Every structure is written in C-alpha cells, then in structure tokens.
Amino acid sequence: MGMDVYGLNPKIKEGSVKPKEIDFGKATDQEKETYWDLENKYQEANVGVYFRANVWCWRPIWNYVYDTTDVLTDEDYRLGHENSYHKITEKKAVRIGKELLANIKDAEAKQASYEKDRQPRVKFNKLCEEAADVLYDEIVDKSDGLITCPGDMKIHDPANYKRWTALNTFGGVQFESTSYPFNANYIKEFANFCINSGGFEIG
Image (cartoon, rainbow, N blue to C red; front, side, top):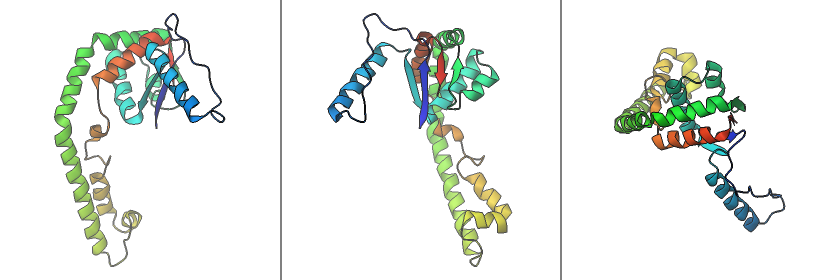
C-alpha cells in the first residue's frame, strides 16, 4: 500500500524512449521482466515521470512539504494524503522542489534528530504495549467470563477500556512518529521529481 505520484508533463531526456506497453495477460515471465527492467531504467533517467512511497514514508514527506515550503493550501495538504489523484500545478511543483533543495540541511538535521529519538521511543512504545496486555489479562481474569474480548470490556468496564486503548498503538500515549520514518534522501528525491514533473497528481 502506497502513494503513486505521476508527473503531468515530465521533462524527458533526449533519446530516452518509454518502453512499449505489453499485454500482461499474455506475456511470458521473461517478457514481463524485460519490460519492467526497461521501464525502471526509463524512470531513473527521467526523474519527473514517477515517484512512489509507501504510506509510512509518504506521510512525513507530505507533512514536511506543508510545514516548510508555504506552497500548499490546506486542501492540497488534505487531498495529498488521499489516493484521490489530486493535482499540483507545475508552478507549485517547481516551488516545492526548489525550496526543499534549498533547505536540505534542515531535512538532514531533522533526520538526525528522528534517528536519535527513535530507539528510546520504540522502547517506550513496547512497554506501553506490554502494560496494555497485562491490564487486559487482569481485567479478563477478574470478570468471571463476562469479558472475553475488547468489545466486552468497552461495554462492561469502560473506565479500564479507556486505559487499555490509551496504552495501545495510536491510543494517545505512544509515540506515533516511530511508525513514520523521516529520511532526508526521500525529501531530496521528491524535490528532484517535483522540479522535473511538470506538475503532478497523487494517486
């Protein structure tokens, strides 16, 4: 699961030819492999054609663009987190790319800070998960069969259900950022895509 970002009018290097589409339903494994090899080389040579990131990597990229470039509207930001094929104009795309590259040192510092904090936060999150498991088992053991699943606890013991959910992933106590890696190289790659994309759509 990820975000596919397509250049609307990408710059194509002279002599670079996009491979002809094949019928994947009829193509042999070798033909498929050859096609994807050529397609990957085409995209590597023409960085404005396509950019992809899984959902865990895309979120910090798009958040960083919104927080640091002053280019996106609130609507751009919201729709950029959806697979709705929202379009960003070439003017905005170029501005995004140039501003990201101009401040790449900031992205590198942010990555260093993220990596420094990540392990202690992962450890804390694990302790929260373990505490949630202990709490859940204790509640179940004392319920005399009344509570056999989280749904039962929500009905019959809402106070402890609230404590249990708070300790779980994304419950408000754990550090959510550990699931969303920040990488300055991704920022640089996306910046170069933006500059060469001719505008782009996020699908």
